[in-house]
Image 1 (cartoon, rainbow, N blue to C red):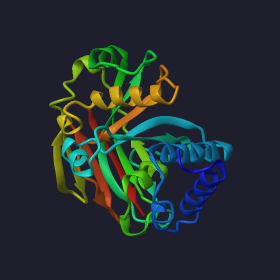
Image 2: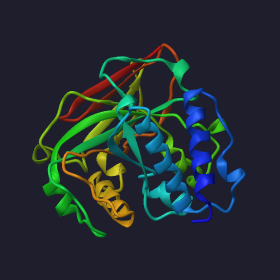
Image 3: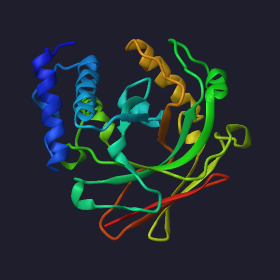
Length: 262
C-alpha cells in the first residue's frame, strides 16, 4: 500500500459524496498516481463500511471485467470485484429514477446463490458447481462516479466497480437444469434487441467468476459464506439509458427481468 489511512478514508468520503450528491468527479489516480491495487480495495472497503454505517448492509458480491478480451486489453489476469448493498436492490418490473444517477448503463448478468461456504486460494469449478444453490437472472445498472466514464482500473475498483443498482429476477432454477456456458441472453431496450450473448462470454463459464472471487477473498483473509448472492459479470455489453427507457433481459430457460427508467 502507498496511501495512509487518513488518505484512504478521505477518498472513500469523496467518492461517497459524489454518489449521494449525483456529482461526477475526476478519477482519483489523477491526484494519487502511485496508488496500488491494495489501496484501491482499501478505499472500496472504507466505502462499504460507510454504507453499512448508513444502515445499508452488504447483500452480495459482483464481478467486473469478466471478458477475456477486455482483461487482455486492460493488462490484467483476473476480474475486479465489488459489493452490492440492500439499498441498491430494485424490484423486477419496477422503476429507477435517472435523476438519482450520473450516467447509467445497464447490462444483463447471470447470478447465483451459494448453499455452502467456499474458501481457499484455489477454488476449482467443481467445488463451485457443488456449492451453488440456485441461479437467477439479473440486470445490473452501473454508474461510474467518474466524469465522462473516464477512469483507470484502480480508480474504478476504489469506486466499487461502478456499482449502483441491480434487479434480480423472480425466476430461480436449479443449476443442474441449466448449462450456464451455453445459456442464451437477449438484452432489449424499448422492444429493440441491442445485444445477444451466451454465458460463455463470462470467463468461458460464469462460475469461473465465483472461483476467482473466492481466491480474491482468500487473499484478503475472508471467505465466501453460504447463502452468498454473486453477480458473475456482464453477459452482454452495457447499454446507456435515459428517462422513458424500458429494458428487458430474456434468458434461455431462466425467464426474464426488466426495469423502467423514469
